[in-house]
Length: 109
Image (cartoon, rainbow, N blue to C red; front, side):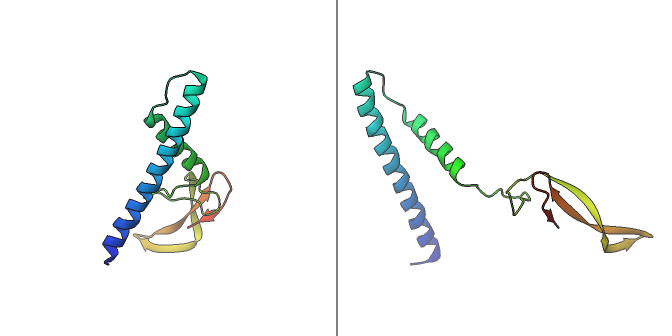
């Protein structure tokens, strides 16, 4: 089995697991709605609720943006690191920049 086929198979298994979760939640909500006398819950509301729970439990990677290795924040202030000269152009020195996390103060380059 090729690597691509394995990735597709893994992706389909994840979809199947999510569908099982939605179906279980839908069955429990329908049975509780019958007992309480309220209307059934829409599947889209269930999916939104599950996505919100996933976002709260795990911190997704932010693609294309710098993130702090300590706290995962994407908010930085930049300063020039005068100890590291990258190159000199027309008599002006160009320094390396250091990124300082606004939340925890972690310094990254």
